Image (cartoon, rainbow, N blue to C red; front, side, top):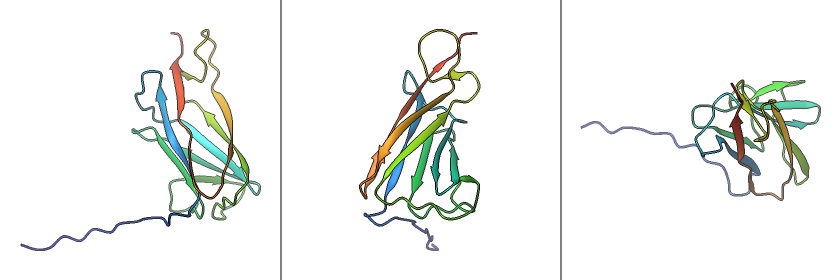
Length: 128
């Protein structure tokens, strides 16, 4: 029987990461949500897949790490600092549970300290 080869990609323990999930109020993942971070005049935007997951990490590459960059192509750097994450809800979803008017954008401030920071977002179905 032939051996199979698998490549594992890991990150050192001291790599700063900001990650989380975008889910509905019941905890089910939402795809198509856009989470962005602005750094050195470059906006890095991660679009969630079927699992609702997003991630930003120090050294993230615009060309190979599933992030879309506007304003430049430099790798993302995340030294210890305050950052603002912005969430744009996909069509049919709202960041607010009150009323039927969709509010599709939300922000949160993050203070990184050389470690992982988790922020999960909850979205609500807009009224028909």
